Length: 167
Image (cartoon, rainbow, N blue to C red; front, top):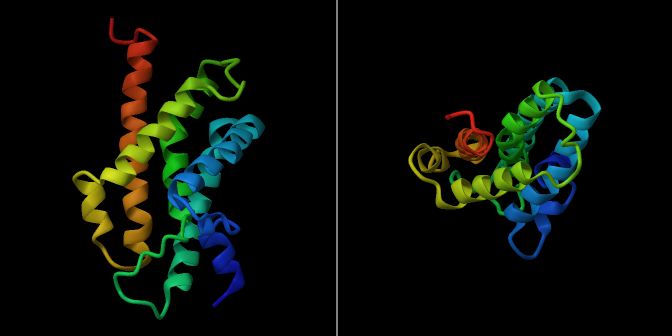
């Protein structure tokens, strides 16, 4: 196995956490997301997310090569990073456009996006469950990407309510 693929797929070993590796990886993913946002706003964060998705797909495909067709090893957590980052997109975009001073960590929206992402990733409703049943690297990555999209949508609605957009 390619050691670079293993490092990416397991987020540098985060996936080997003895308890709840997916939740640990999602939590760990928040700090670099915040740093990317702080360094370059939403554009840098979005580009980094797309790179993480591509690298994650590649690494996951290499990591699971030769394993059972429906294998989804718990230590593969780069999919959690991708999904969590997508869940944070609306917050990064909103802070950039509002010229917000909300660079202070932890911003409540970031916590909400984390909880929403974990909710959709664990319960796997509708399309998230469909993607989870797909085989190979596609299925491993896609369910978390879709969970991240759902979390982003709900986080945006919550932010809209909290900031009075609907009144």
